[in-house]
Image (cartoon, rainbow, N blue to C red):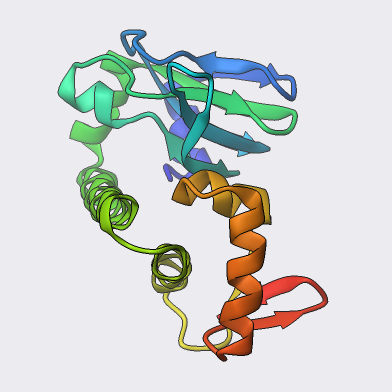
Length: 195
């Protein structure tokens, strides 16, 4: 999100996390800005009965957990490393000073947060009223729209990750994707999903 050459002028800590390690927990008060230099992060919630609901996945060069920094509220989800990760960590006050000094980056964050709010609104609607086919297609079309491409788009999510993001069981996702292929609403090539 923030170009590394600019970020590094603010002396961030570069911390290594192991696969499975928690970066922060739901309900903690945010004190830092986090940006992945390498690896993959999952933001998730656990229900009272232990079921996991994934809020999103974040890859290298993306940031995560920023809304609580702006809103001064507790993290609404936990962040866990899906791989070994290198993460830039910047104190909240330094991050806010960076944004004041870099209005173009501040504007990018505003757009990013608006896109995340749109995604959350779409997913909440899907989870509450729509059948599995509609939920999955909405997620896949959102991913394609976010990639800003009109070409055939490869969905780089596993069936499990689609399950986690839509609140569906993995078996339901597998069955639904096969049905969507039969009805020509998506394409399967060597077990990969394209839309």
